[in-house]
Length: 131
Image (cartoon, rainbow, N blue to C red; front, side):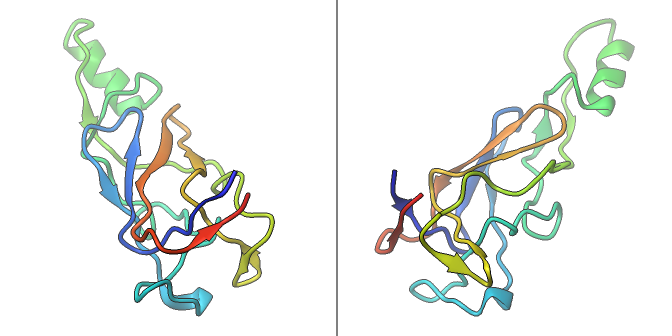
């Protein structure tokens, strides 16, 4: 399934986050997509490419579990600090950027605390790439 090529400024959302986030893409891939840098599956570094999603509500997050325990079992969200487990999947099988598969709008990213990060808006709508 084809999706739009993802670029810097794409809007992201985590299934356990409480606010959207924007993808940060540095120009090391040397490919622009209508102005901003285009992303590949390795643009997934926490606090560099993936910035926090406000508050986290995952009980797998130790800070959430601790705060919830202190509140006698009442779910207590804590600040999000993404812990990424691997690259975006599946990535494009037909387009490489910087030697790695291009990131398209159908890709997902996993957080160690159980969250699924997805692309809500790819940052541009003119260029598509296949899976």
